[in-house]
Image 1 (cartoon, helix red, strand yellow):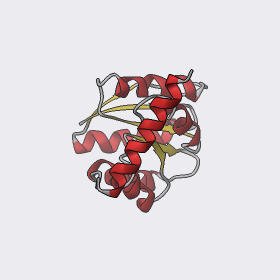
Image 2: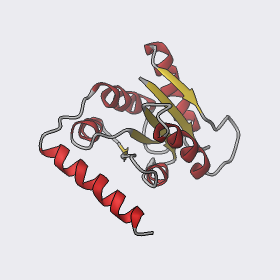
Image 3: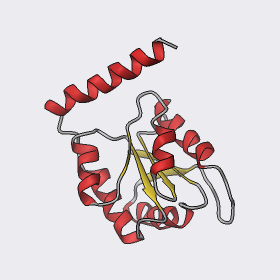
Length: 151
């Protein structure tokens, strides 16, 4: 699995901690920014990382901002992306098993590094269950396609 990683300034420190975990676990990733001490717009960095998932260059993305909410909003504007902000082990589990999330959004101002690493581990390990959830995901993508056609 190849991950695209990005943060804004509010998520930078948490990203650093998660990156250290990914490195220690041997998980491949590319960091699309931002760097230390920068004040940036999360939109730009989230869009860059997620566009690489849409293109197929990367399998999934993990994005960091103050709450995870802004990055999730940006990511969900891209076709084929299911971005889920997670704040505990349960939301991490269902984001994958029920929602087939391919983009995780985490908040540097609301999660400790220990919490975030637990969430990331679960999000990377869990598989989509399919079944009744598959029907719902198909409906989401059909809606996405229909709404984009009408523009």
